[in-house]
Length: 122
Length: 107
Image (cartoon, rainbow over all chains, first blue to last red; front, side, top):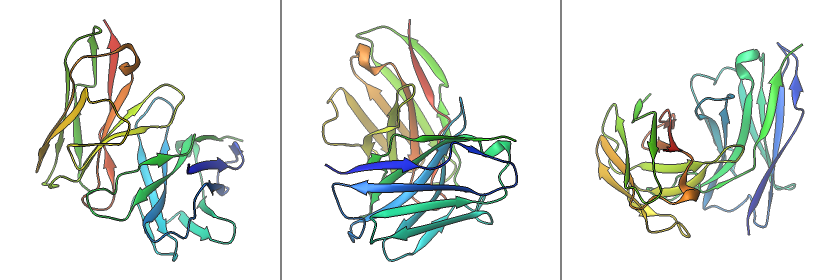
C-alpha cells in the first residue's frame, strides 16, 4: 500500500528557505502513471496547491509562489522535495505531499501524506 | 486562475439528513472536479473525482454531479463519521484551485 511521509524542520526563520522532503514507500516514484505534488493549508484556512513534479523532473508551479518555489525529485531515494525561499509568517501552514494520476479526469490527488506543520517565526 | 466558489461555508445537520454542497467555477471546467473530506488534524481524503466517480472504498451515500461550471456533492443519509469539512478542487487547468470549504456540523 503506497504511503507518503513528509519530513523537515517544523520551525523556519523569516527570510530563510523552507525545505521539506516527501518519502514514498510501498511503490515507485518513477512510475510513469503519477505526478507528485505539494499542497499547503494555513491554520484554520483552506487548501492551496503549491506545485507538482513528474519523475522525469518536469515541474508545474502555482504562479502565486513560482518565484520562490523549487520542487525536485530523487528517484534513487524514492523522494521528492520542496524548497520555498524568503519565507514570511504567511507561509506558516501544514504542508502536505500527495500523489495524482496522470490519466485525464482521474488526476485528482488520491493519496496524501499526513502533513507536517511548518511555523515561520524568529 | 479559475476561481471556485463553494457554498455554504458551513451547515448544521442531523444524522440521517440529506446534505448538499455546491461548487461553482468561474469558467467551464468540463468534469475536472474532485471532492475531498477533511477531518480535524487529518489530511484530506479523496471522495469523488471526475465530478461524479466515487473513489474506491467511499460509501455510496456520497454522490457528485454536474459539469461545466456548477457541481454538487450530496450525502444522502448523513452518518456520524461524515461530520467534517468538505472541499472541491478543479484540475482542468493550472493552477489547480480549491473551494473555500464547507464545514458540516452536528445540529
